[in-house]
Image (cartoon, rainbow, N blue to C red):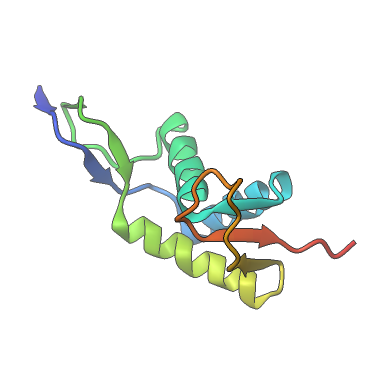
Length: 111
C-alpha cells in the first residue's frame, strides 16, 4: 500500500457529455455559483460515484482535488453555456458573496 500525504490532483472518469449534464443539473439547482464551487460539486459527485482515476493500492491522506485537465474541460463547457445564453458572468463585486475573489456565474432566467 502506498500512502500519499500531499494533496493530489486526480482526473475524473467522466466523458465531456457527462460533465456537461452535471453542469446543467447544477444550474437547475443554483441561481449563481463560483468556478471553484461547481468544480468542487462535480469532483465530489465523481468521488461518490467512484469515478476518479486513483492509483491502485494507494491511500490519499493529504486529500484529493480536481485536476487541471478537468478544470479546463469544465471551463470550456461553461463557455458553451455562456455562448448558448444560458449563463453569464457577473463582473460586479458582491461583498456578500462568500468567495469575493471568485468569478461569479449567474444562470439566466428566461421565464
